[in-house]
Image (tube, rainbow, N blue to C red; front, side, top):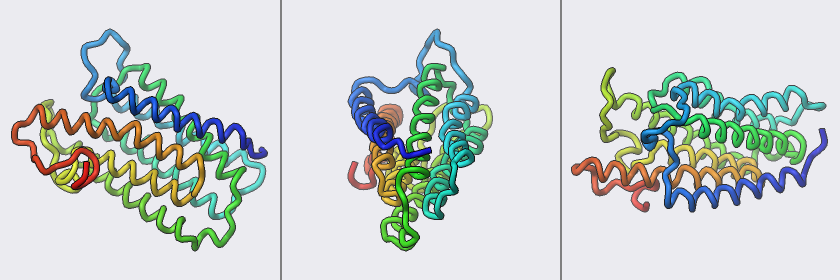
Length: 251
């Protein structure tokens, strides 16, 4: 398959504009999944099923493109693409199996799955067919720095999710204040970790698709961290006043 440069460019721009629109929408309306799902007549899917279905395309689409590529990619592209797939393998098969979250509306799951399919295609197609990383890229400062940020962010994200899962004992449904790790500094420690992941990935690949995805991630889960922060402050009178929403000591 040859590089569909125009398609990649337009889809990447679509991520940027879509992220901006999503950001401004969330300043008025919280996306109705998780704790923000109110009484509804919509079809709901159990959290584990919902996360599996919506995240799976981001893993399967790149794997399919790798298996059907006419020529094997270079080491740099393999490294970067499998780094992307590593995140979604963890989210699809590990996080979804462990999550104790609330049911999600079917339409949210479908829209997330469509997004993951498109984004999975953009990232994989660009790395496999468009940008040719020279062997020297393996020693490039951008690659090294980006991968360090990615794996540090992934560690923060996974650890923060573990803290959230362990907040409640079996049978408990009440919300509690998360503590430990980065939660001692921000309400959205898991979101901070994921944003760091994709910013690192964008630096490591130094590509328009990756930067547009990082931008979309900031716009989509950044406001959610703010809503969580406000939720905790409204619900708990003893919520730590020094804790920020997303960025330690800043915001």
